[in-house]
Every structure is written in structure tokens, then in C-alpha cells.
Image (cartoon, rainbow, N blue to C red; front, top):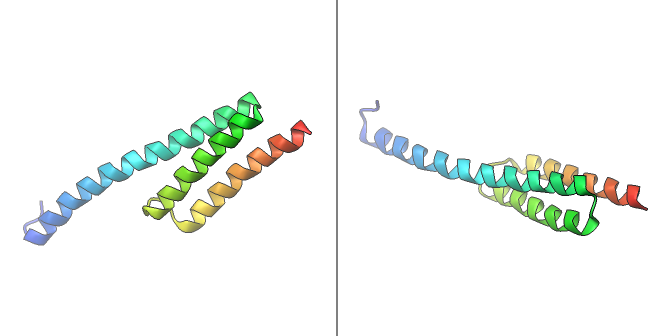
Length: 91
């Protein structure tokens, strides 16, 4: 346990931030999971809508500091590539 007042405050802040980040990470994971489930259905309209939601969740995680900006770009690219493959297979 920290003895210095500022260190105790930092510990309290860390607990709050960790809880907040955990919630944000779960939202991100759920959005991506819903998108992948939509990909399995093969319905282009649903996939497009879920892609928007997943991209928004990834962007938000990047803005909030949960993901690095390069990680955000890589994940968005991979999500879009999956949708493009589905569209190309449907043609």
C-alpha cells in the first residue's frame, strides 16, 4: 500500500480508469463480434450496418486511448477487407 498521499490518489484513479476501460473494451469486442456474426449470415445490408457500428467502436476506442492509432487503422482495414471479400464473392 502506498504511503504518500499522491500515490494513494493515483491508485484510486487507476482503479476507476481500469473499470472504465474494461467497459469500453467489452463494447468494442461486442461490436466486432456482432459484425463477424453478420458476415456469417451473408446479408450485405446487415453487414454494412454492423461494419459501421464496429468501425465506430474501434474509432472510439482509439480516441479514448484504449487502442493505439495504428492498431485502430489496422483493425478497421481488416474489418473492411472482410466486407469487401463478401461483396466480391456475391458478384
